[in-house]
Image (cartoon, rainbow, N blue to C red; front, side, top):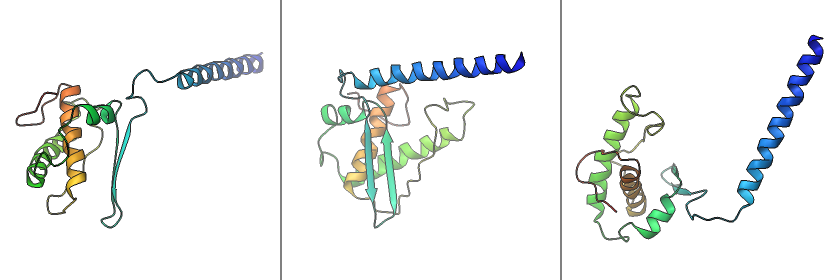
Length: 146
């Protein structure tokens, strides 16, 4: 009798998983109604051996439609703001009891003595602005509302 119950549980589990995967396939197969679905931005520099991957629905769309154009800010401005934002971000990662650990999952290894270049700093800065506006967070200083 116990074997029959275990077999039934396994069969129901398989049916539930197959139904769930069918629902996911239908969701993926639907045409995109929002351009922010499956949003990934990759920032890499092989010579410095670093890689940043931003996976946040809506960021690419926001970057293309709301962010200031490249070269709007100086490199030093971006570096200073990124250092400020990343320092506060990392502080919040270490305080999961105080800040939502779903928002601050990982620390960011941003070292001001490394020259990451304009593009990397531009994308990190804009992600921080997007993050603060989207999730109603304030990492420090003035946050442009877009």
